[in-house]
Length: 287
Ligand SMILES: NC(=O)c1ccc[n+]([C@@H]2O[C@H](COP(=O)([O-])OP(=O)(O)OC[C@H]3O[C@@H](n4cnc5c(N)ncnc54)[C@H](OP(=O)(O)O)[C@@H]3O)[C@@H](O)[C@H]2O)c1
Image (cartoon, rainbow, N blue to C red; front, side, top):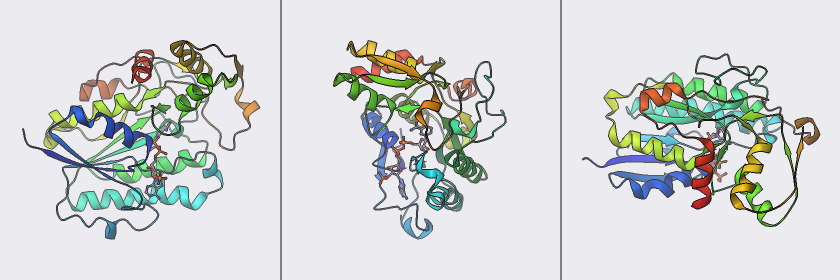
């Protein structure tokens, strides 16, 4: 089988670290990582892509992810999450390079509990600046016919700063916690996501890919409070976890109260395995 070259942008981030961690399982994929020091999304991208040969795929994990700060760091959020995506997809189009990009559940308002979760055709209505810029970014990317955009939600892993890493550190330190109980969604393992995407690239020819927008999620629907309790149970540590409402936290950015994503379409098209959130949490804890 031919060695496929994949360039991953956003090297130091959580999801890129997951790709780096699972790459040993894909000897036929040559993954190369690029950080902000090589490709800075705040500057025009085209002159920074000085590669002699384009890769077989580009996977973009770089993003401005400070959801609350985005309410005030308007320019930076829109530059990195929206405008840069237009330049990135234009470059990919010019060099006929397929692109994978990630968007977010924050494109939805979460006002209604959609049975089965939001689908790819559900109406979007972001309630925060991060969600608005990410929506514009996915719209820019989707203008390119060879772009695959995966909306993901509640991403966590053993890498970087995320809900799981913060909560598990506190639980292990014996700290009592207050966690919101009025936002419902599904935690998504970055390791499972990275594995499923590389496995799909490994076995698929570009001409056979059904490009477009998809939801990627695990099976289940829980609150952040439920997730914290599950982490505690799996770690077998005893701390008190108090359930509170989002209003008590006074976050700058409004989050959707419901953001479960329906990933049936992606599972059908890409043969992604149907993964249950609790099993994935157990896997991450075992890692
Ligand atoms: N985390 C979640 O819960 C979640 C949920 C839904 C969707 N997503 C999406 O999933 C993707 C991956 O998220 P993640 O959790 O891996 O994010 P992350 O850990 O915050 O990583 C983001 C990466 O982007 C890089 N970056 C930021 N500004 C940059 C710039 N100006 N130029 C170049 N690189 C820059 C960061 O580099 P530095 O380290 O140098 O800042 C970092 O490597 C993103 O598209 C995010 O929007 C995440």
